[in-house]
Image (tube, rainbow, N blue to C red):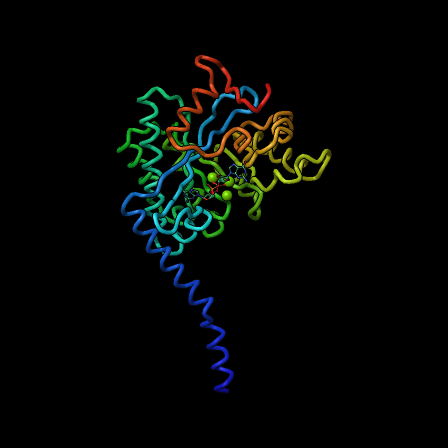
Length: 293
Ligand code: C2E
Ligand code: MG
Ligand code: MG
Ligand code: MG
């Protein structure tokens, strides 16, 4: 009995697990410090209209480079922030930073029509979220129609009714709401039909196998484009990396493209430069060097 318990204990507190737990605590503390000392930043990835190749908007994505730990991906620190009670403050920081950036672009005559900000499921448990967004827009001078909030399908699993109410209230503020990573969660279609979102983003996993002619992935993507559009939504394809993917998406009239083919996420300075080089002055279309008309 004792021997067995001892063995279980040993298994439970294996050195690897201790180290993993310590790493998590170290990382969580480092994140807390980074937020406090304002060392996180946002990068912005262009979203391009498929037909005209005008700039539709940009998606704000959080970046963290720690002086000691180096680059830590959002795939790691966002879940950590959610688990350690730091996501509320991080979400407000993302919103405020993106809104400030937008008003700065407007002041400098840099025409970025929309900025999209990612929020976590946890924010949608807070009934005050629309008020928080309204307050931040007010404080920063952000025009509501230039802000889109991205939420993922998993957001709705906890409390669908409340999510509908909050999304409705955010739309009433005049902001867009986008369903991110669409097609990976469950009961996707019923969620899409009953949420007043303005935009749907096809998950980037669909871009794998998409180029196969007459393939199943192709058919699914085309169906999502049709359904989204028939519900009056803007349809965005994420993770577009190849010419072939772009041409197929254009042929099926998917509205907006986001991916490395057009640009990686950029710092505000690089984005301003990208707008100048990719958009000829006064020209109607974004002409990307690597994408023929
Ligand atoms: P997401 O919102 O679905 O963002 C798209 C992700 O795909 C970004 O990864 C982007 O850099 C990447 N991506 C864009 N184009 C391509 C492409 O052509 N190919 C490939 N392979 N990837 C591409 P990133 O920046 O690492 O962010 C990962 C996720 O972290 C985001 O997924 C989002 O869910 C979350 N995230 C990022 N910033 C924030 C934030 O400020 N707040 C919250 N709550 N979540 C955030
Ligand atoms: Mg997103
Ligand atoms: Mg996504
Ligand atoms: Mg994602």
